[in-house]
Length: 212
Image (cartoon, rainbow, N blue to C red; front, side, top):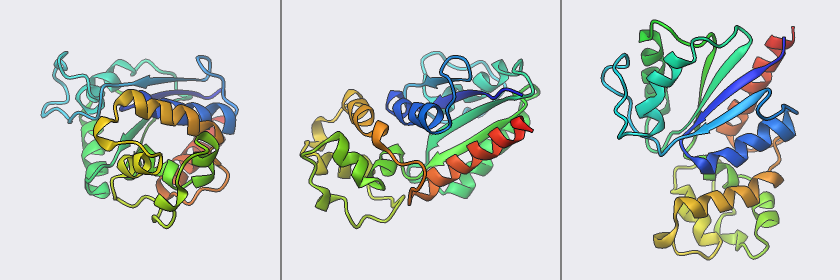
C-alpha cells in the first residue's frame, strides 16, 4: 500500500522540519503522500471532545478532536501524525490525556500517532549544532554546546541568544525563519534528541507496516 500522512502541528515554524523529515529523509511526496496543517499555537483540549470547536480558538489542541473526527474518512493505509510541544507538561500524563480523548471519539482515523517535541521543536535544533551553524554562520555555538538533548531550558530563548537576537523581540515569523534556515541541514540519520528519534522510529514503523 502507498503511505499517506496528514500531519497536524502547532504552528508554521514546525512545518520546515516535518517537510524535511518526510520529503528528504523518507522520500515522500508533498501533497501526494503527505500534507502538513499548522495551527495557531498549542491551545488546550476541550472538556467535551464531541462538542463543536469554538472558532475563536484556533490552537492545535482546541481543534484536535474535531479535526480527528473530520478525518474518519481516511483509508486504512493512512496515518494522522499529531506533533505537539511537550512544554512543561509531564509527558506520560499528557499522552494519557491525548489517548483518552481519542478513545472518546465515535469516529476517528484508522491510525493516529501522537508525538511530543520535548521541550519544543527548537530543542531539536539545539541537539544539532552543525545544522544551526550551516543555517547561521554567525551563531555562537558556545551558547548551546553542552545542553543536554531535550532539556527543558527554554529552547527557543537559548537559540535566540546563540543567534544574537533579543528574546523580547522574537516573533512567530522569526521562529519560522530559523526553521527554514536550519531544517534543510538537520541530520535525521543520527540525532541525540530522544523525542526526535521517537518520531523517526514511529515513522519508520508506519512505513514498514504499509509496505508489507
